[in-house]
Amino acid sequence: MNKDFKHSQFAHCESGVISSMLTNSGLKLSEPMVFGLTSTLTFAFFPIIKVNNMPLIAYRSIPKNIINSIEKVLGVKIFKKSFKNMLEANIELDLAIEDGKIVGLQTSVFYLPYMPENMRFHFNAHNLLVYAKVGKNYKISDPVFEDVVECSQKDLTKARFAKGVFAPKGFMYYVLNIPKEIDFENILKKSIRKNAKAMLTPFAYAGVKGMRKLAKSIEKLKNKD
Amino acid sequence: MNNYIPQEENSTLNGQQKVMYAKNNSGEFSRVNYGSSAEEFATLTAVNEYKVLELECLEEIKQGVASPIKYFMYKNRMDLPTLCSGVGMFSFRVKRHLKMKHFKKLNDEILKRYSNLFDISLKELKEFNYE
Image 1 (tube, rainbow over the protein chains, first blue to last red):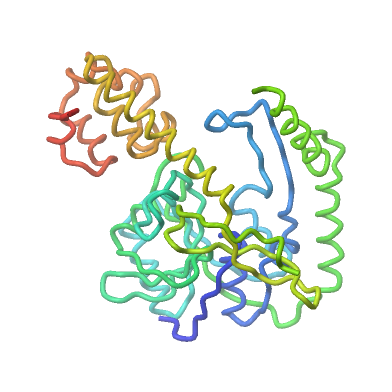
Image 2: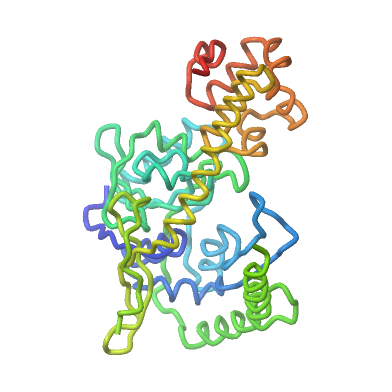
């Protein structure tokens, strides 16, 4: 159980979780910094691919990209594990929390009872932090919420093992080791370059060109009605 | 300087507020709470879409065309791929189960898979009351 844990609210879930997790483990990183370091800021607009009858618009890389690349970029060691068995997943989670770890989980928004009713959709890549367990309830720091929330083990398990696109499969992760010295000067230069490349790609449906394309197609909507 | 940040009502968040990043008075980026009626509109549109499908489906069940599974699918805000993955069956099979004439022939074991996913009892699914 982690007693010093401090909750803060973020704009996005995955970047917020990583920022919160690292900050609470001693490496102070803001959410924009996490986004930038991992070069996750991208943009893509695919009018042909439809998701729920809407054209696909992506403003960031696919889920799990931040978790995977923060390891590579900073040399931080992160424990990552997916599960097939629900019971095993719960035992592992309990052990990690008892150990004082702050554990990140991938969940489905639909099964989280503290979510407002109107916000509950089948989105499987919502990340949150568990930092304590009281009785049968977990204390959760959900990065998009103003304050910490609680969730029962039953509901959380359901959310962790939801099926569908990006199925979480009980995915959990926590920080193992943070290197003492990080050469931010070089890392930042590299990250900025990589991010700029992604934004200035010649591919017409991504990056800045993708934004222009989206803007144009929004303008066209006016004439459609 | 923060006067361009929307501070409108957003009923879908149950009183919570989300944050966005904006420049503060000293020109640094900081987190600011906001409420956006455009976001509210978008969320409610998505929610209502499922409600409309739900009501349409009730009508179809009355006529004996659609099965209760279809109703619960929309009630749980699922689409066909999500439902298929949830029960672990191929879509051509699930599509048949959405029709009343196939639904009637289903055995308890298959129905149990659906009722577990929808978090209802087997009886609720079998003796679905569309009133």
